[in-house]
Every structure is written in structure tokens, then in C-alpha cells.
Amino acid sequence: MDGVRRKAIGTRIYIGGLPLTVAESQLMELLGAFGKVLSLTLERDPFTGDSRGFAIVVMQGARATRAAIAGLNGHMLNGRRVTVAPAV
Image (tube, rainbow, N blue to C red):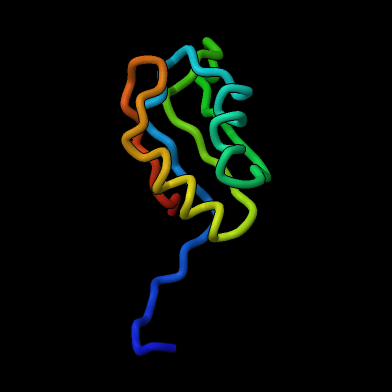
């Protein structure tokens, strides 16, 4: 190593600020540009079925995860600016 320690990044991503009308297929297409999506959970209200405005995504590998975060954080989606960050 070159003396620089890097914090390990997992493969789970939080995407917040999603438009309530966004579909899973739309997110899969958007994220697929950065690597393979292993799973995507668009959180929904249990009573109405409406989107709660956020999703949890698992990407294949840290490289795809970093690329998706860097490429999509602040991205405009259906008129809303989304927040993309490592999920804890």
C-alpha cells in the first residue's frame, strides 16, 4: 500500500428523495449503467402501496457501488434531486 488507508465500502446503497411515481424498473435501468444490481427494494407504505421516497440497493462489488454513488448523487430524476449514499 502507499500508506493511505481507505475505508472499506459495502455494496448497499441508500437512494433518497425519490419521486413518489418512480418505478423499480426505472431505478434498475438507471443503476444498471454502473454495474450489476443484485437487489433493489423500493420502500412502500404498507397501507396504500405508495412509494415512501427511498430505496435500498445492493450492487455487485465495491467498484459498482462507488460508481453508482458518484454518478447518481445529486442526479435529477423526474424533477427531484436524489441523494445516493452508502447504506448503513
